[in-house]
Image 1 (tube, rainbow, N blue to C red):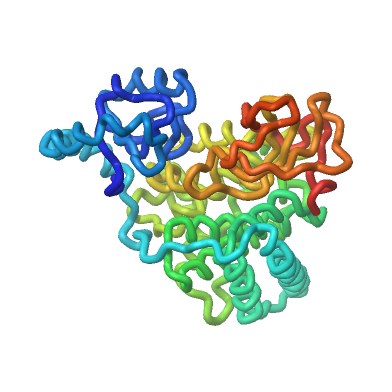
Image 2: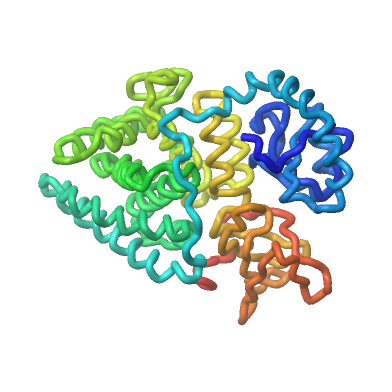
Amino acid sequence: MISNSSIEIPILDLKVGMYVSQLDRPWLDTPFPLQGVLMRTEKDIAALKKICQFVFVDIERSEPFVVQKHLPFAVFNQATSSANQNKSSNSEKLLQLDPLLQRVKTYDDFRTAEQEIPAATKAYDFTLALLDDITNNIERGIKFDIHAAHEVVDTLCESVIRNPDAALLLAQLKSTGKELYDSAVKTSVHMLAFGRHLGLPRRELSVLGLGGLLMDIGKQRLPKEIQTKRSMYLKPEERKLMKQHIAYSQEIVTQLCNVSDEVIKIVTQHHERENGNGYPLNLYANQIHPYGRMAAVVDSYEELIWGQSGMPGLRPFEAIKELKGNAQNGLNFALVEQFAHCISIFPVGCLVELNTGEVAIVLSQNRTQRFLPRIMVICDAKKKPYDNPATVDLKKFDLSPAGVPYKIINDLPQGAYGIDPKRFYL
């Protein structure tokens, strides 16, 4: 969507300091993992020059001195702009969301992430306790209380609405040692944050959160040795067993009263793919419910980002690039693009390396410039922990002790340099 503050300029006029909000092609065809990017270096510009003829620049997000001379150009070329938009109409169709996912509300942050952490922690702990009850009931063949599940998810939902970064930080750092529990809560939080980012109604957020929490509940009936094994490491026979978790989950959830059809769709369709190569029913495109498509994106991301013993997961940037590749093979283009923008290239809770050589943890996002999050600098250039980590807001261009503004140069996999970020924050 091109905002009212955007102007169209030829690619040859692109300058450092301009914020590119839209291209003449889908963002998925570019090396940039997010929709919308600030041109910070000539290298960024060179990457776009290779593939674009024109771009749209957001005046309000750009440095004033670099866009000023282009304002008359925008007015003069208003008619031309309409013609060029027709050229990219086919590209834009790929980025159109299902009508059910069209924005109806914009959620503002009512608290900072730090202010929301106590409430998010309570909601997180309530959710883990609920999963413990559900597991005990499944083992004894007893139906669990869906009303309690709704109430707990609603509590988590309210926290995400106030500020999603708190719950996302906990999802990244908090661990119970029970991987199925941790995975279920992470999925629920990601689904809630994704729905909030899309601007879906409050009721629909609860549906997404509950669906995310329950969509892998059937894994509890699988042999313990494969319950938490990532699909890429499964042997052929193990893969056949793993696929049965969908049927187990469906059986558990459909036996409950007052479970919405949308929750059941999330449970049964999160492994379906739009090209028909998913399972269990090999559904195509619009045969898959929009929430099932959302869940497929979230599930794929978590599969990539979370490693297992001796096998670390991908760095966030690598995971987003891999998702883009998967969008060519069955994931929804528009939803991959939106999810990448939702979690950012530097997700809350991830480790990053700075231009000073120091290591930091991302604490919260800057909603308009996601390359400039709020961070905590936890290790020095030799990767030795600081006794008193400092908090830095990158959008304020705070200076390092060396007198240069802090910049993120790289994201890091979890556990890089033997660093456990939980010891610094939780």
